[in-house]
Image (cartoon, rainbow, N blue to C red; front, top):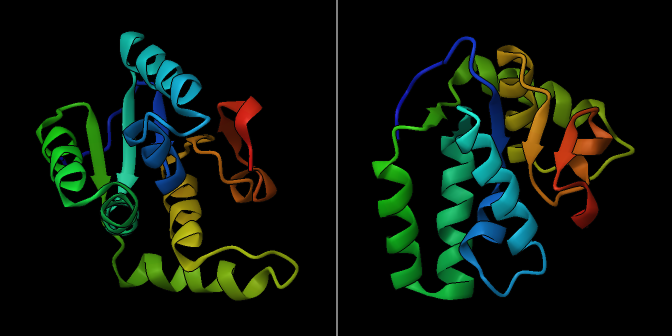
Length: 148
């Protein structure tokens, strides 16, 4: 994965639920999530994710699909020049803490909050995810028909 902040390109944030739907052909959102990803890349866009999301995704793929599937996912994602990997540094973690404790009526995970911070900082408004929390936080979630 690359550390970069593309300018002028269509950027789509990819959350753990989005990566999972892409990795698991049995996921009900697999086909629609794959279509959104493929259309984004075909149109010259890039995918953005974070080290926290990668951590969650690797663990979840291993638990649900096995270690081999996690290794295949890592190899594919790591080799891509069309994926930007943002790191959660102490400043971003502090901003995420404010989101986490500031929304008492929501069940956002801390990782969700770090994603919201990165999306806001980079001006990204769309996320590839089936996690309803992104819509609750004011972002557009794609694919829209597969929200959980």
